[in-house]
Structure formats: C-alpha cells, structure tokens
Length: 538
Image 1: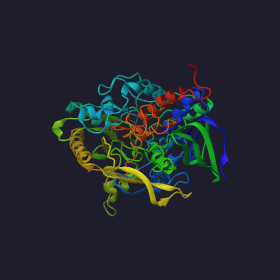
Image 2: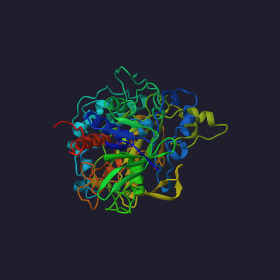
Image 3: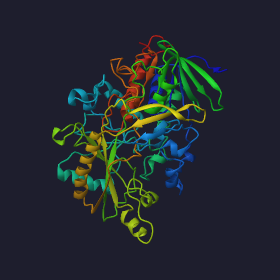
Image 4: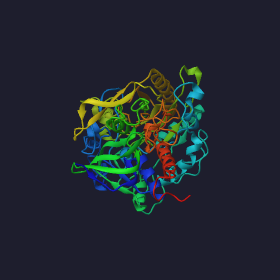
C-alpha cells in the first residue's frame, strides 16, 4: 500500500541544473511546487578537494561514472554496447556537483542545422527565444567571462570578470593570434567577484570534485536555497519509479523514500528533469495499459537519438614549467574558428577547441587522458618532463541524431531496488571521427606554434560522456518528437520535459547553459496554465 501525499500544482523529478532552475522560477511565480531528488545534499566536509587523497577520490569514490563510483544514490548503467561511457551524478545539484563549469551557449546556427546544412532536424525554437533566459541564468550562476566575443551574438557584461588564462593558455592564445584564428576567454560558472555567502575562486584546480569555497556554481548553492526560500519543497532520497497516468494525462509520480516506502505524489503537472538517460528510463518504466511502449512514446522517439559530444584531444609538452595544474581544469579559452560548415573539409558542421590545463601528480603518473608513464628506472624523469609542462586542446564535435543511438531498459541489470537499469547503445558516426581528425591536425599546428616540443593525441576520449542529449526531443510534429517547443509532451498535455533530452540536435558546445535557459522558459509557459492554483497574476 503506497503512502499518499497532498496534491500539489507541480511535481518536478530531478534537482539538477534543469530541475533547480525550473523549480526556482515556478516558486517565484507563486506555484505550489515540490521537487523529488533521489540523491541527497553534498556537504562541504565530504568534498575531497582539500585532502591529500583528492586524486584517489577522483578515481574511485568521486569518479564521474556511476558504475565506478557506486554511490548509494546512483543507479547502474548498462553501457557494454556504448563507445562512450555516460557520466552523471545524482544529488541536489545533479551533475553540476561533478562538473568543470564551462558555460557556453548554443550558437544561432545550432538551432537550424537542417535548414543550413541538410542534416539533423531544426529546432522549433531559436536563439532569440532563449536570449533573455540566458541572461537571467548567467546572473543566477554568477558567470565569469568577458563580453564582446566576435564569434557569438552580443550579450550583456558578465556578472564576474574572467578567470586568469594561465601560462599554457596564454601561449595558445598567442599562437591563435599568429594564425589569425578566433579565440576568446570562456564563460565559466565560477565566482570571481564578491558574494556575501561564497568565496571567489583561488585557482586551486580540482573543480570537478567540488569546491569547498563555494566558488564553483553548482545549483545546490545557487538556485536551491533561493527556491526553498521562495516556498518550493525539496524532498531528497526520493527515488521516482513511475509516472502515474491515465489516457492523455499524467496524474503524479510514484517514488520510494529513504526507507524504501512506496509513496504517491499527485500533481496537476509533472515535470521531468532527470537528464537524457534518466528521463528516458523513467518514461519507459512508466508504460501502462494505454501506453504499453512507455509514457509519451506514441512516436517511438523516447530513448532514441541519444547524442553525446564525441571528443578528441591533442596535448603539447613544453620545456618550460607552465604550472598547468593551477586553475580550474576546463575553463580557460576556446576557439570556434572551425565551428560552422566548410564544404571543402569533406564533412558538415564543425567543432569547438577548448584549452584545458595539466593533470595533478597522480593523474600525470597514471596517464589520465594521456599514455601512462612507464614504470621503472625512467619513471621520475618522464614525470618531471610532463608534470605541469603540458597544455591540451579538446576537439568537441557536434553529434547528430541517430535513432539507433538510444536508451532502452536493460534486460539484465537492475538498481538496488530491483528497478531496470538503463541500457545504452551508442556508436560514433564517421562524420564525428573525421571532424576530430581534422581538429587534431589544426590544433597540432596551434600547439607547435605555441612552442610545444612534443605532441600527444587521443582520437576519442571514451570517458567523456558528460552530455546526455536528445532522447525525448522537441518538435512541432507529434509523429517525430516527444515534446513541443514549450517542452510539453504531445501525448500528455500536463507532462513536461526540461532537461537535455529535449535537444533535437546537440551543437558542439557544453549544453548546461542552454538546458537551464530552456527550463526557465518552460517554467514561464507552465505558470500560465489556467488549471494551476496561485499562478502569477496576469
């Protein structure tokens, strides 16, 4: 017998980047909203960044892959048939708990790749539909950066000044200048200014493990405290197992509380914010007599079109000590010189080149993304040659939708509660491999021009599945999409999806900023619905 909760206007599933932004916005509209998160709060004292074992934690207890980390809040992922390992985090803050905080926006061309290049599909919305929400979100996430980038649409002054480039990025920027190629300091969700409750970045480095200073902007410290102050409810360790429904309508969600009790939360509206893997899994788990193939899945698109950002990397080794371990790992400079299509390359679309810093001592010794240093007599010599002496450039490609790249339910693996795990089938298309090869060639030129005496490259970073997109895509045609341009499901008018699963195409940049802008816009659309109690006054 399940325990029933009082009915609410909106129940949100997932307290990560999208769920936090949407819940905050709804609460400020006066909507009675509750968010269910299967993880808990990550406390400052649990962050390993200040301990001597911080790199060991990164390799085990705080690894971004839940299959390695095996946190009690996680669920396993069947990725045996995936070329890229999916990475995510279940907690208040979601995967912003374990991210590098690089914070670009999709570019206008990313919303119309079919019209421009005859591939993928066009979005039903464009950059201008999100522009105002990008600005709201940048303020909430205390973005550091520099206005005036000639490669992107105009935007307001960044809330905080940009992060220091570091010696390696400075050399690379000078090389870009000599080659006449675009570069710009990144937008980063990292506090570099003043805040009464947080300390600014001190360039200590391992941002992905958490920031004990509160400088790195995970949504547990940006959105959630304000959302709760505005009246939102947040229930942690609440594992949603099914969206309850009747034909054409969601009625609420069933979830297991921290003690394993089955609870039912009725709601006028249900919002999914569980990422491109978690949302697809739950929609498929919510099959019923009237939707035997999964909720909101009459189009057979739920779980299909999974997109990552296949990424390669090229590293330069320099004679000089660049102290490359200093500063946030993934937030320095970017180049979008080769972002858009040039038919002379033999493939459509392009890539973003992102400068990243060196690894720590253990990561250097064990190789990290580079070949492992040899053990034995020559180990320390090779270590001294590389530690702090490298700068890398990642080549992030635009993935395009492929219906065979998909999330289904695993027939073999379950979570701790016996619920089917998601299974991922994913292969990298040849166009992405060709793009990475071209990007490595171009950025080898950059690193040599910057003074590197040795070049190391990696054609695919298999462990870079941070971006989980496309499995419940938006579109105006109900036969080929799951939600409309407002993020409302075609099959159930009170079911909304606001995470990265709604992306019709992926662009070639980190998606979090765009995900949150979409969630804020969807919150405004949802708050206008007449069946809600206490909505924003007209």
